[in-house]
Image (cartoon, rainbow, N blue to C red; front, side, top):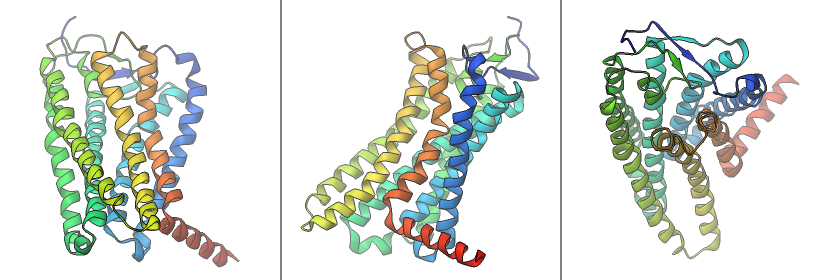
Length: 313
């Protein structure tokens, strides 16, 4: 239990399933490739097509960029463990990875609130939609999301660096996460636990409340629309957003609370496996959900593919 400052940590991967790492890596590699391709195509489509430079799609492009960063921050390191047993990670790289994961989570949560507000204005107050959500307002909202995330997550650096760590350098995880690293400390981590709970309750928790209120008002307005076609169109757009919200918050909250309160009731390898799926499944599915359900994006992608095919011929 001698306290010291470790030069490196060792990431286990998925504890208890080490002999299956090669087989586990195959679906993760496939999902990562799909996530990269899907998000890059979606981002390129939104940037290139002028007709998609609207508030909803600009927020979607920010969400797409966050998904790319989240999966790229974690999955290549996981695959290095699964394939080549490269388990060493320096203290600085580990803390930087933990910071980026939490930073992206808080920023993405804020983007989802902005997207809910966008749908609220579009459906409940359509006459003011263009004047309220101008490009300058959208950039300010996205900048505010980044600044808020930095202010909330930056203390994680200090909270981890202030700790004195024991000789045990093994992190029973596939990537560096705040509490997984903090549990290796010899000193008290009460501040880390309290701050982690505060971050979730005061950032993501409040965001969920705002989203719930927005969609409560949206659903009330949708059911009051006189046209059945207008109701279907509104519900289709909102349905895509609600699917993304469900995919984002459910595994994140499950992983967060089981890591702190459900350690004995849920097998550790199940918790780690679900935490690994969280960083790759939502980024993979988000482009599919919006690409399939959104007619304008679908038609734009098809026209771009047709144009590329014609140029080759």
